[in-house]
Amino acid sequence: MQSSGTQSVTRETPVHLEGLGKDYGHFTALKALELTVPQGTSFGFLGPNGAGKSTTIKLMTNLIRPSRGRAALFGIDVRQEPTRALARIGAVIETPEFYGYLSPLETLAYVGRLRGMPKNEIERRSEAVLKEVKLTDWADHRIQEFSKGMKQRLAIAQALLNEPELLILDEPTSGLDPRGMAEVRDVIKALKGEGRTIFMSSHLLGEVQEVCDDVALLNHGELLIHGSVRELSRGADTSTFQTTFLHSPTPQELEALTGIPGVVEVKAEGDSTVDLRISGGEDGQARVLEVMVSRGLKVITYRPLGSSLEQLYLDRIQESDRL
Amino acid sequence: MSTSPFAQVVTVTSYEIRKYVRGRRLLGILILVGLIIGLFLGLPPALGSSYPSTPDAFVSTFASFTGLLVVLSGVLFAADALVSEHEKRTGYFLFPNPVRREVLVLGKMAASLIVSAAVLSLYYGAAAIAALVVTKSLTWDVGLSYLYALAYMIAVVGVAYLVSATFKTTVAATVLTFFLFTLIFSIVGAILPAAKIDPWFIPTSASGIISDVLGGTAVRPGPGGEARVGFVPDPATSLLVFAAYAVVGAVLGILLFRRKELAS
Image 1: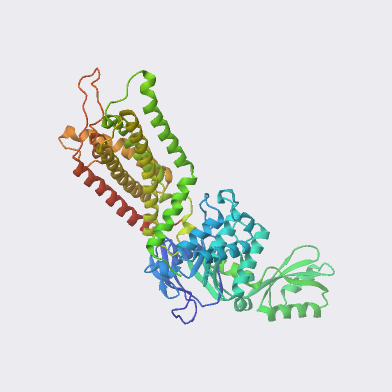
Image 2: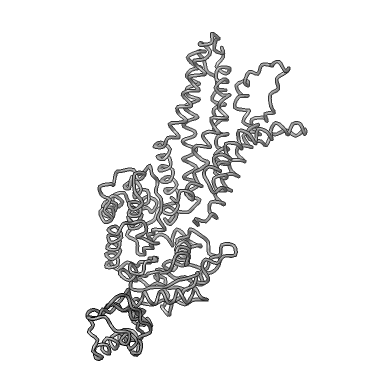
């Protein structure tokens, strides 16, 4: 069993998963996930492909049945009362397909009517969300003409239509070009600014770091870590720093680098560039720089390669794969 | 913000009808219906023979194609209605909405029935008008045959939804529904009398009432000897059989669709 920490659970808690698990025959896609996402949190659900992220989201949105445990949205059991539980959410799951014979406006009207939104509200919100995902010019075109990226943007639009209190996004930038990805991230950040709760799965760490406050790491259907992005970044054991010197370090100097307290690994990457894997968090990184300078090494640049969270992510995934 | 399940059924029905209206299937079946009507009306004068003299006999010629038209409607407008949500991944956008699966099935089923009934009504309407023009009269039996055809259509749609909820691909669901009504039921209905069992419970046998009420399709003995017409139950039994297939098909279809998971 994995624990999400000690957040208190109320009827207004957007996401509360209790021992949630899913088996497909003999294969366990999700073990027994314990997770609570408080209101207003932007939550990143990280893990490599096949970790169990989509399975969790499908369980949360009643697309599949749990083998054990329960998922509750705003205190309502998704299996027991699916229509009530799903009423306050918007979801994008994988890259959904739409009815090709409908236009985005008609699709949004369909979703709005199913959700009981008044006609004028559907029109107002449709216009707003299509503008938000930059599909206004395509509002009346049949979806059968759309690219995968356009469908993904429409998926986000339909998820936002009812101004959901909880937005569940499964790999929301999947299928988008770099510009589209950036636009979607901006939309998510804007929603975060409005105080909505966001539950977003991704295998892109940078994306999660950019958008989310809290993060959970999943692998082989098990929760490995869970906490705030800041805390986890600080608490990460090691980070890799690319260090460029004015002159190429001699073999002796390279040897000396490994002796600096906090340096775990030294890897020469070019004539004058060395990757240093450093432990001890931000303090450790500062100490290593100080020592190098005090020993007369002329450091031109000293910058993190990826983030400490990335290192933590890779370490934990590697560790979990070994088990 | 919430809405009643009935309003949701109406919404689903209206969008499903839009699908059929905008798709090629409705156009295809309408072209087929036009072709069949053209053949029934055009062939006798082209071959120098006369039209039947009574309205029942006249419409009876049209009724000989009704069974196949009903099955084609079931195949085109019902057999893939549920399975396509899974196979074409549209369920990923539809199912996370606050709408129960049974509401989706009922809405889709209503659309299938409305579109199939519209096609059948057009066909019978054309036959009735032609009968009125040619024979200058019309009987209530034509209306009864139409109602029996509608009842058969409901049974076909019910079974098609069960098949659609059971299978994983649209091709499998449509092919099985088609062969079930054109081949499998017919073969079983033809073999059972040999074992001295009346096939009253076979829907294709029961569909014989559609033609029977008009005096039956004229069957002329061929060189092999006496022509035999298959067993046809009485109308009340046939209607009960249709109702049973429709209800059992629809209920099992709903139950299976509710349990079906959207896992890729």
